[in-house]
Image 1 (cartoon, rainbow, N blue to C red):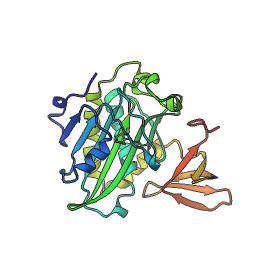
Image 2 (spheres, protein in one colour):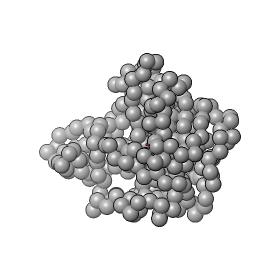
Image 3 (cartoon, rainbow, N blue to C red):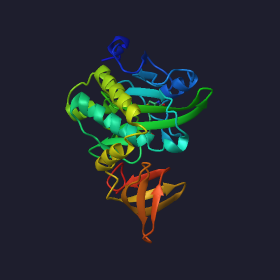
Length: 256
Ligand code: BTN
């Protein structure tokens, strides 16, 4: 099942369907004069990117979508954007196929401990002011054999969860609607959205390892703060807000 341009004629944001691209985030960066809310969506990326400079495997069967927002706020007022996007996509997946994934702090949606979706938010300064590009990759109908061997055991798709082929047009339409709703709420309803994020976050209440370069520091995840950062209690009892880097959760992605 393929994405079709005419499936998006009634979208609240303008949507362009691409057959294939390197990365929808990079394609949007090349269109930096594009209006607020411009969405690019494709079924295949040749150079998908993830957080921390990693690549993001983007085979046929996935939905890879980025939205360009011009939020009219400085970067330090947008720290919660990825967390709100996670809530928007979680709602969209539930709208589309009745599946309620959990959140793995900071930018993954997971189901049964396996990765269903990744989110990459990038801020770019343009002549028209600061813009945020939020890129989302969802394993929609991806078959296990389509994932590279190193992610096969930790990835899952909506098709595997539901036992049915999911129409990527339906999924992308639901995503655009929920991202539109998120944009309207971005600076005014942050608290309610972050409460929903924290309630869905599997990281909270678990023993974790905070990874920074070669260092792995054990901690307990206490909660989510008002910027979407993870509040951790180190073994010496001190509390810190972790806003970047990687946090492994016991029992997920091979961490035992
Ligand atoms: C991660 O898991 O670290 C984030 C993955 C983000 C992937 C999406 S797919 C659409 C957009 N284009 C990209 O190159 N990356 C994001």
